[in-house]
Structure formats: C-alpha cells, structure tokens
Image (cartoon, rainbow, N blue to C red; front, top):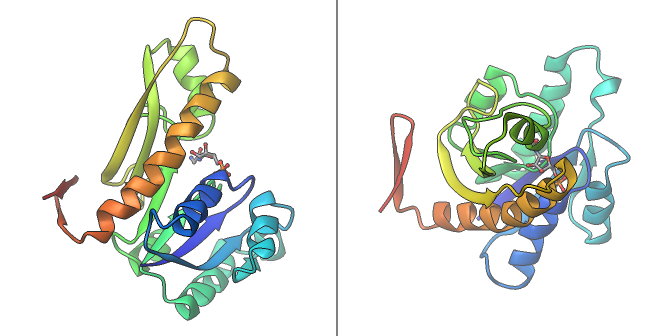
Amino acid sequence: MRLAILLSGRGSNFAAIQEAIANRKLDAQIVCVISNRPDAAGLARARELRLSAHVIDHRQYPTREGHEEDVLRVLAEAEPDFICLAGYMRRLSPAFVAAYPHRILNIHPSLLPAFPGVDAQAQALAYGVKVSGCTVHFVDENLDAGPIIVQRAVEVRNDDSAETLSARILEQEHIAYVEALAKLQTRKWRIEGRRVIFE
Ligand code: GAR
C-alpha cells in the first residue's frame, strides 16, 4: 500500500504511521511527504528518515488552484494508493478531491459530525460533552464531512483542559489512523451512501 502524507505541523500522526510500518504492524510504504509549511516539524522528520519530502508553500502561490496543481503534480509522480491528511491545515478544492475519490483520508480530533473545524477539543470542552474522541474519514468536498472509517472515543474528565483532552485524544488518533489504513488494505470494504461497510 503506497501512502502519501500531507501535513502542516508537528506530524505526530505521520510519525505513528511511519512507526507502524517500521514495526511491521502495517504493510505499507510512504511514497512522499508534502508540507505546505517549510518549518513543519513533520517535514524535518521526513527528511531525517530520507523519505521523499516536499515543501509546497501555499504563500508562494497567488491562487489556491496554482498551489493545488503543484501538490497534484508531486502526488501523480508518487502514485499513492491513499493520501493521508495528517494535520494538513488547508481545505482541498472539489477538483482536488475528485482527482482521488475515496482515496484521501483525514483525521479529526472529535467524534464527527460533532465539532468540525478548528479547535475541536476546545469546542468539545465548551459544549460540555462527556465523551469525545477522534475520527478517520474519507475526504469529500465538505469540511470534515466524508464517510467515516474509524472512530475512537475518549472520556472527558472534570479537570480536563483543552491541552489534557487533546493529549489523550492524540494517543487514540495514532491508533485510529493505523487501524483505518489496515482495514482499508484488506479491500474487504465497500461504501453504501455515507457508510463504509467492512466485511
Ligand atoms: C491532530 O490532532 C489532528 O487530528 C488535527 O491536527 C492535529 C495534528 O497533529 N487535525 C485537525 O484538526 C483537522 N481539522 P499532528 O501534526 O501531530 O499529527
């Protein structure tokens, strides 16, 4: 299974996927890592690992289309089976999504459809939910909205801050992303409407 990673920052989800591959828990290879930020820690890690690492800095492009064209060009050369958004903080245009139907995955730090968008963990705390978690889903043209592949729940504690809740959700994110990829790799799944059905 050939994986492309798109990230913007820390890259701990990328690291979790990479470690699962290194530890033979996931039979895959990372064929390219693309960051829209030159200072992303995840990009530095990709370079240390001697992976095919690319900076495609959106600030250097006058238009979203121009930036996406270059990302799509790198992806086309890498020929990934799946594209993993791992803290990639840019929305993809409908044309980008249409180029890889049901082949782009995202991870989001809430139980979608609750709390899409930024600061999902702080949104969950402010709302007062007792359970939150994370979601790995296919990307469609809407924000944090595509068919759900895996979710993992995390209890919200009385003394949680956004930081402590985020840290516990992040532990589950790392498990969930690897689990989602392993499940997709079986090929024993299909999509019915919004539902991803595993056999
Ligand atoms: C993760 O918590 C991920 O769920 C979140 O950004 C963080 C990236 O961490 N993504 C979103 O909020 C997307 N809407 P990482 O760079 O350490 O993987």
